[in-house]
Image (cartoon, rainbow, N blue to C red; front, top):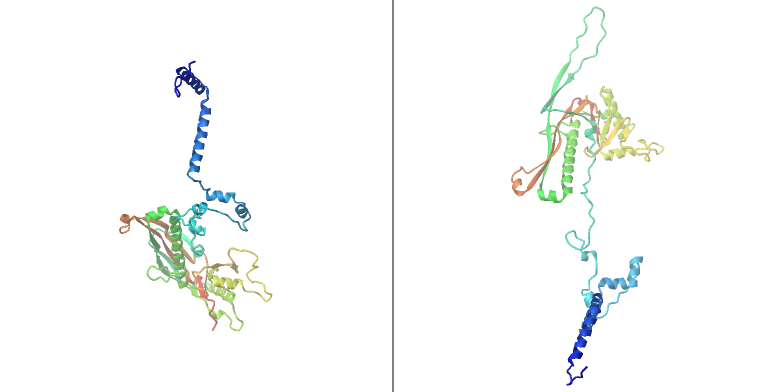
Length: 390
């Protein structure tokens, strides 16, 4: 081996030997080991850069909360207090605004915000009474617009005994023909196609709601229709008036006495036995609260449940479709009355109305067609609970 001739100049033979040694070391070192060493060097370089730049990444607000034992205890016990200390530049980075954290700040509205909402499916309807009156009358179908029926105007007289070989008395009878026209009860409501598509519950709500109010109008017509215009000829307008002379002013009377005397009036007229009484809910509860001299309720023990209360075999039907303080008593027999259904309840949706097709609007229509036939108005009695005997 030769020595260098000048300072700073490496002998060619020495340089060749060093190069050979370096190549051998590089070839012998595993690639994975070199990769790990490179990562360590990169980390050291990053730390040195942060230190030289006087920069440190502040912990997140969530990390601060997790590290605080007092806050963890507060969340667990749901009471007490906790202190979270934030110093230096961290305060500016973590709490840039001094605002109370509430739900409205985070956002609870369905259209914005980060808090989710729990929506119950469907739409809660308004108060609706149960419709009982139609169930008291027999229904039959019809395909005609007008229904005629014949009833006796002057009945046969009672037969009499006659002697042998004598002329028998001749009977006479007079009939009268009556007719009722089919009436239409309907209602409509417009809606956009978009709202029915976007709010699925609305379609069902409108369908059920329109059906209910058509049936409610039918119930009111059956009870109180005055036969003017397109109104039905209702039961009350064709019923017999209660005879207040059956009450005793000296003996006194209550609501229950009025109903008893009404049933007596029907029996005396040889009419059908009544099997129902329609009253307002106020009057029903006034009847149910009547007590005897020992404080016992006359219409049954309050602790025992019953779907439909009864009085002398007559069902007491409560509905706000009849005025408070009044009543209607009658029979469910088709001999007394019946309903002829020309068209059952139908709900239709169409764009065929004005310019609805252009505006993407829909018209929802609900209707039914029927005729009410009161064959024997004397089979029904209506009256007032507040009318005193003369």
